[in-house]
Amino acid sequence: MSEPTQVRLRRDGPILVDGPVEVRDHDGTVRRADGPTVALCRCGASARRPFCDGSHRYSGFDGTCPPEG
Image 1 (spheres, helix red, strand yellow):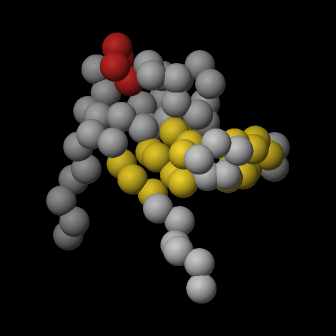
Image 2: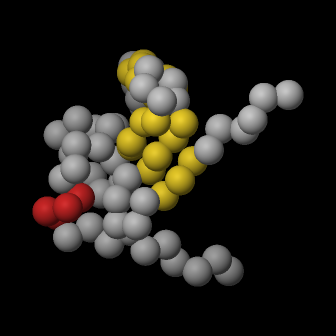
């Protein structure tokens, strides 16, 4: 059995996914990322969405997750 895919949330940053991955857009467009780790935008400011371009550093993004419950 292979190891499960890891998804990590960076503090005030992107979602990191162990690659390679395919990201399917709402309209069915497929974007492939073949790197060992893929960074997905959470702040909405990236010019490369759905991928992160580092814009969270300048957008004031607060990635604090609310408590579960």
